[in-house]
Amino acid sequence: MPRGRAATYDTQREAILAQAALLFAQRGYAGTSMNEVAEACGISKPALYHYVRDKDELLAEIVNDHVSRLEALVAEVQAERLAPEAHLRRLIRRFVEQYADAQASHRVLTEDVRFLPEADREQVLAAQRRVVAAFADAIERVKPGAAAAKLHKPLAMLLFGMINWMFTWLRPDGPFTHEAMAPVVADLFFGGLGAVQAPQRAPKPRRRQPAPLSS
Amino acid sequence: MPRGRAATYDTQREAILAQAALLFAQRGYAGTSMNEVAEACGISKPALYHYVRDKDELLAEIVNDHVSRLEALVAEVQAERLAPEAHLRRLIRRFVEQYADAQASHRVLTEDVRFLPEADREQVLAAQRRVVAAFADAIERVKPGAAAAKLHKPLAMLLFGMINWMFTWLRPDGPFTHEAMAPVVADLFFGGLGAVQAPQRAPKPRRRQPAPLSS
DNA sequence: CCTACCGATCGGTAGG
DNA sequence: CCTACCGATCGGTAGG
Image (cartoon, rainbow over the protein chains, first blue to last red):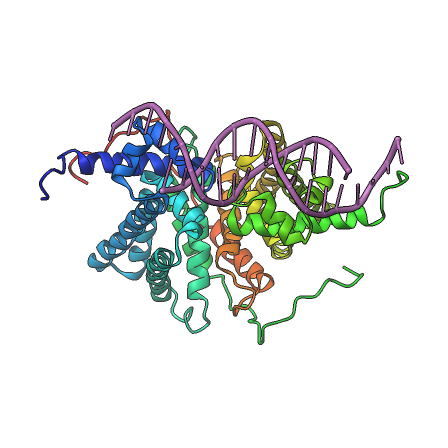
């Protein structure tokens, strides 16, 4: 450990990241100033810059930490070697639980990743694609043929839509918890899988035109 | 029509709102400057302020126009007096089509409504609640008893999650169009409705605690 | 006295 | 880890 780095440094830095994630989630990355972050942490702005190089790094750390935990979750569940349906159910439950514990970071990931510099952004998006691929594979194993119809990834995205959207309407003091909703999401998704049929795919990039007079 | 107001005024104003919606969707409301809006419209900033009072009004108009169209859609579908399942299917299809034609406005609605002044924000959120209520009612008619289990609104939110999330992953040049995904969403949702059971509800507002050592 | 703008700059505040 | 600042840019408006 480098001489001169206080034992509290890492603790303080994590507290700062957590506070910043809260503020970014509330007001957005562009709508939050470094002054506000410093004030919320109870430190001066120069003190804040002792822990982070710049505003971008603050965002990159929050988002990287979160997406890394998601990848770790996928690995943990895969290590359990469950049967297809149990595997996908576990994935859903673990992700919903993770989102419940990291609502701020998760909103920042979904809304503010666009403000990252190209290199960091690509790294995060690559990790997100690996997570989506893991869900798509799990879906293919539950519903063989989905991949052949190129439906496994769209289905994975519909599933992510349900659970990513939960942070917009589930209130901590409401009648339902994230944990209570996880089996609802799973039941809905598994029940629906059997009913889904392959849709028509666009043969060529179509030209968008204004609609004619008759609707 | 007021004397002296150019016939092009309304046309120009609508073009400005459309451009601003595009920019806000790309960079966020707080991340977009009035200079950028003016430049994208090919006019000077003072000219921009000839059409809108301030930046807030720009946001309020975009979001109000969009949410008004959603309410109008609900009314149109209700006027068709369809059977329960056909009714909900039509709602899904019309909303997905509307989102496809107004992707920018829709993203602004979902992400930037928090930047509106209190009064405008409450007006928009009230309209959104009416739209959600219409979907929840439609769900209750398809699956009687959902409302008794207080599940009709959570189910409506899961449905909105699937279709609201589509703008994050559906590419205009991709293999699937919004229109092609609408029946997939509907099939998945209807197929799943039968499998959903009432979850356990939180008896009291629970206190959030750090997890103990054993997971 | 109206509209539809222009070039220039206002008072404040951003990130650093 | 503080006060004191910077170059630039913010949302909004002056006179003509």
